[in-house]
Amino acid sequence: MAQGAPRPEALIKWRQSAYQVLAWNSGRIKAALAGPYDAREVQSAANALAGVANSGLAGLFTAGTAAGKGWRATTANADVFDDAAKFRALNEEFARDANELARLAGGGNRQAVSEQFLKVAKACKSCHEKFRDTD
Amino acid sequence: MKVPPLIVRGALAAVLLAIGSAAAQTPPAAAAAAPGPTPAERAIEYRQAVYKIVAGNFGPLSQVAQGKAEFKGDAATKQAARLAQIATFVGDAYPDISREGKTRALPAIWTNRKEFDQLVADFGTHTKTLAEVVENSSSAGEELKTAVAAVGNDCKSCHDKFRSK
Image (tube, rainbow over all chains, first blue to last red; front, side, top):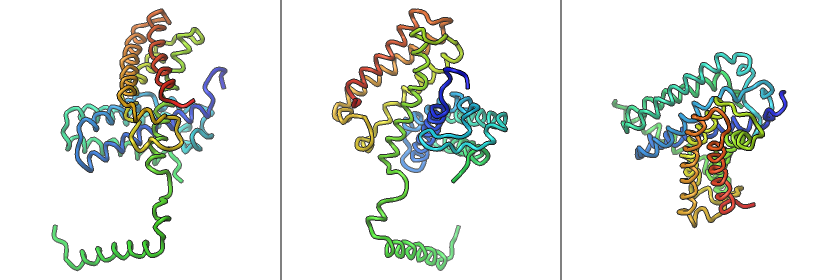
């Protein structure tokens, strides 16, 4: 590993943090769609989602971080590193869906937001199925 | 859609039965201690994740401003843009339930919320400026150093007042 590069634990911690932010803000949107719809709350959460989705998540999965512990042991599986092109492609798809969600959230149309949120959730799921070890 | 009443009653009975038997087998205290983190723990974990990303992006910019690392436009632009983005929702990471727990966040955040919110707003303003400055920079000039310092001061003044040592 190059000198001065972040330690694997730091990178793993960082990426787990990024996914934690995604999960949390997805939860905010889910709650808003399930209960009283607060457009400002949804916009704020959607912006956070899009912000993280566009921040180069794939770049946090560098060589040497396939195993290890950040906040907890990583659940990234070997395919992330063996099939990096596919992983990046899914990441980009997710970012596009999240951008669209943030755009729609600004319009305040609950139905449109709901449909787009489903797309985002599917993007999460398709990536997790292939690239995350579930316990 | 019409559902035959018998099936509805059957399903309801099954649900009630399930609840009844769970209640019969589980003492109330154990039922309350659900597996996994509590909402408060999750909120605190979330907040720490947010700050991990803040630190991960501000660290390299600070290094550049101090002349300890080389200015790389693409990376710096991304880092500053992320910071500006995150700054918009840092304040949301302090719900009331996250006040107690394994956290260095001081109670003053909740008792003196106005001042806290003002510091968060300053952080938002200064990270936005930093993102603009970095985008228009080709080296670590004075303007960039000033913009980084402004953000660094926001971090510090908030930590001094609202984070335990």
